[in-house]
Image (cartoon, rainbow, N blue to C red):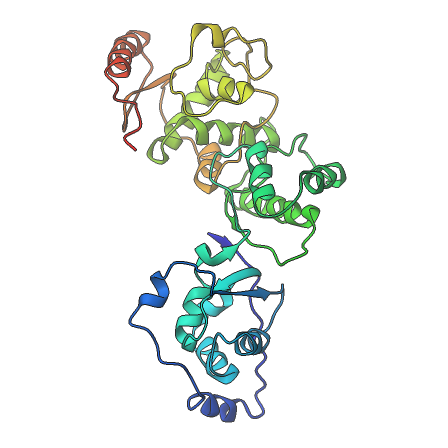
Length: 342
């Protein structure tokens, strides 16, 4: 999903119909046969800076001045008639020259043509998000200073988990503190919608967000609600969670499905093999479905689950079943079933 500020088109009722009639005959370049939409970015392309709150006429004028469209009126007419124009994101867009108004709009809506786009994937760690911000043009000192200034939402002790996964594009010159605050506000909105902030007293919002982050790291989308139930069942029984993902977070390791015995002995509050209860905070930034699963676990008595093979995750309340499946998992691991095919 793209996080974008909606365009406010300048269109007055007095003379509005007259303006639309004029745009229908406005000078325009010939449209491509679709090649403009698949064309690779080249040195001949032009940077168009879309400011936050820019109007349709602002954008049209800039496109005309930079030689992208043949007339501002042509683009304005297309934008007014296409509701997708409200999704144009602020920021720097790399656009081909001499496009028809329709193709210009398509390129403005293409996220691949947004310079400095920050794409936070579900489950990403904050440390990884900050690297994304550096790649998008922020300096490390920008990010460090922003973190020093940022105030956490009430009830949260850590920023981890509060940078909501989405595509973000910010206008040139947007301070790092404003960019991070936008991500946090989005997280607050999503948590409220999922019911995370409406705690029943048993679990705090911070704890539910932590559970959601574990769900995001441990399960495939189809298994989120079952993983959620396993977590709650283990907590209720006073069992250690024994989640590999919490140890991987502490070690800052990605891409290794196998957790060694040595790793389970790691001295860390995030090691849920040694420590009972939840870790002290989230282990990544969960998406919407993981948030929903944290407050809506599927009914069941499961306390074990294991991914035996890719796309084959099994749940049980029986330690005997779990033991048999673990042998099968190790056999498949040795056979290379979990190795990337890329």
